[in-house]
Amino acid sequence: MATMRAAVFRGPGQPLAIEEVPRPVPGEGETLVQVAACGFCHTDLHYLDHGVPTARPPPLILGHEISGTVSALGPAAAGWSIGDRVLVPSVLPCGHCPYCRSGRGNICPELRMPGNHMDGGFAEYVRVPARDLVRLPDGIDLAQSAIIADALTTPYHAVVDRARVRSGDRVVVVGCGGVGINAVQFAVAAGGTVIAIDLRAEKREAARRLGATAVLDPAESPDIGRAVRALTDGGADVAMEIVGTPGTVQMALSTLRRGGRLCVVGYSNAVASVPLHRLMFFEYEILGSLGCPPADYLRVLEMVRTGKVRLDPVITGRLPLDRIAEAAEALRNGVGLRTLIVP
Image (tube, rainbow, N blue to C red; front, side, top):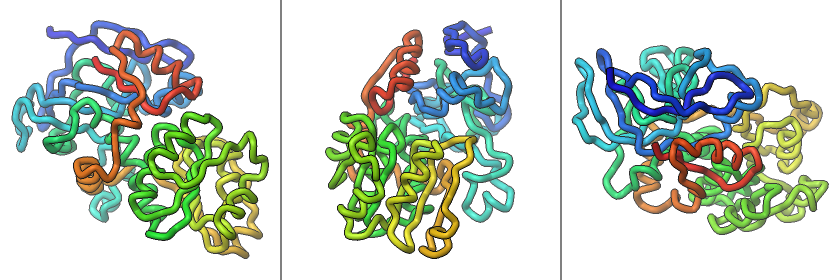
């Protein structure tokens, strides 16, 4: 039996174990993808450190931001050839339920996620249904493209589809990590005037380089809402919350002008309190945003191909599989934006 190297998750509080495991064999309608790179995401840290359960119990191979090349084809894996450059979406919908048929496959009740419901990309190979693969255009770097599968498509859906950012909107982005920094990029591309908020100076500076017109440090601005209102003559049209804590949700809400929209992208199982009188009286909208519908991947790829959004400033590290613990530690400490694991 052929084998491969993988970083295996065996339970919360345990480091990922680099092991030799059986190489997957593609079944009916499946492909085997040789992994070029897999981004290390905060979701992976939720499983490792915070006790968030994976849909499939461990042992499990984590990793859901995957790019690579088609290495083998199972029976009836139509439309693909060995060597094709591909992206593996971070959310794989069923394709036939009412949500999928209406273009909202990202909230499909039967969706599967690599590194959660099935083995993911912290390995040399990953098995993926052929129908879910996305062809990678020429001119986009294969390894760098891995982060498109979540760190770009998720904020694209949040900014464009859910928060509906339009030209001239004043947009606040709370949290400028691997997803938030790209919310900055997409809001700028949509014509928004962006104020970026983060505790770390290097992330604020990255946001400024990618188009934010102002940056704020919450440690130096105890009343962020007042600071944003001063900068925007009344408040933001849209606030994007991309941290996932009750405090940052409340902070983002405090920045809105009347009629503003709060889009929550950060994950938390905690409860955030909302001032209902303000919600009602100021006609706020509060929206959730999860992943990205499959149809939007092509739009994001075209924006990358034409340079409207950039990958290179977002990738702040590349590590081989046997140094994956360093990627986890950097994320714990808030260092960098996105680290690629290159098996």
